[in-house]
Length: 191
Image (cartoon, rainbow, N blue to C red):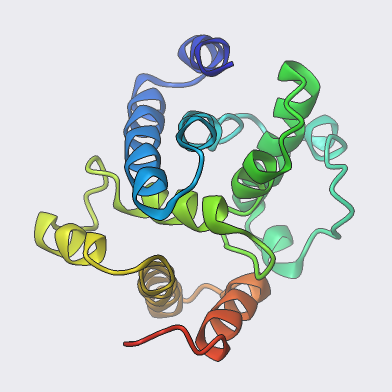
């Protein structure tokens, strides 16, 4: 399935989006290996996470959403946030992808979600720290890679939240719920 999705991305998305997706997939595989998650699932989630990122979000695309979640106020203000949810729906429809771990990871990779599992956390982190990202230094990337999975997720949540607030954007409610869940789990050593 990885190769079919890659061909679709090569044909339908920009070269830079393909490179970002391939790099994200590599980081996902590395983190999956480290944290005991199926590496094949990580590879597929990584390559496919932005499959609808450059797609025009019209009514037809929004009608693909069949995930039983309402469109949040943050998604209404910034429709690009819907690309994960639409991407998950597109993967189910176009590629008959049924794996809930992969679909859930892709669905919530932009905001995070309190119900996402390890693969979701891995994709959320990998999307943020992949080497093509210019907002993060190699030193910070290496520092993040030394953390455990929950600490990594908290770090990425904190960085994204700070960026959004500093630039006048609203923070998605699901992001805050994920943060609260991780902090209240008692498994975070350092925040």
